[in-house]
Image (cartoon, rainbow, N blue to C red; front, side):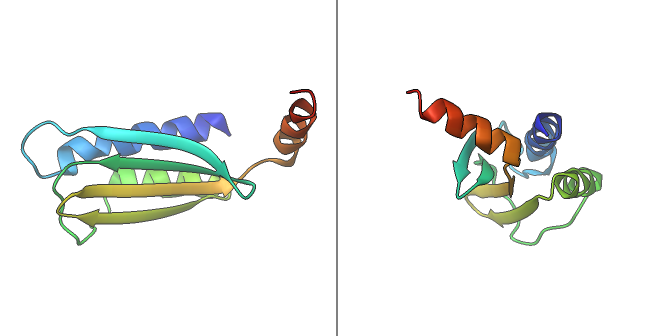
Length: 105
């Protein structure tokens, strides 16, 4: 699962530059965390984008990779940048291992 997550994040960051529309460099921010047994990754950038989303090859790739891990993608675009959220269920064995270690801390 970590390979798919890394590929999705890399593709979203890579797509931010050519599709951002600012004509200059963009800055991207990535966060990954747990929310209610879901792994949630947020990718934000400060590129000025159109509010209308036109899918490109990279978008289809991201959607397919997300589907492989039972994930969901939310996309928001506006004059202050883009915000993409990927969420997918945490694997049960990962949750169990995390719980085991939590009891020792």
